[in-house]
Length: 153
Ligand SMILES: Cc1cc2nc3c(=O)[nH]c(=O)nc-3n(C[C@H](O)[C@H](O)[C@H](O)COP(=O)(O)O)c2cc1C
Image: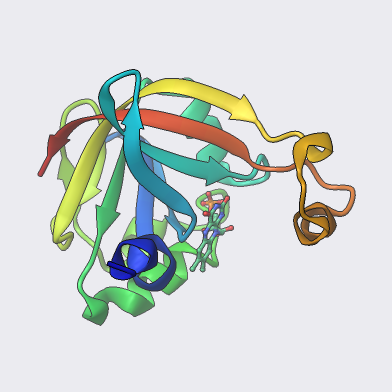
């Protein structure tokens, strides 16, 4: 049962927003799956300085995709370089998969196609752990995005 909590943290995932012609992806290890407003949902947390942040704000759909262990290097690259600076698709060696509303990658073992239904900025005043407050220093905390899972691919 404990494995459900290691899905994001141990396995990592890619968060992608935008369409085939204009998208960006980054590695995430914070997130969760559950139920909200009677819908199956995925929650992700994106810091404002990520290039992916503007894609998450500008697009109505996003995907969260999970990969076999052999793609760990590709996910490391997606989580350490910015799409502002390089073509991360090319650098990672992953193959873009066009889903119409959004993109994923052919190499994914599962992709959750999500419709954005809620977002909110985390507020430091509401953080009850000092370690969480200290984590941010003077920087803006993560924006929470919740997506309704439309399809599991
Ligand atoms: C394992 C791992 C997990 C990460 N998890 C998150 C996350 O949950 N939220 C986040 O904002 N950034 C996370 N990052 C950092 C982004 O992936 C990283 O800053 C990335 O280079 C941003 O790319 P972009 O500027 O193209 O959006 C993670 C990085 C790694 C390596």
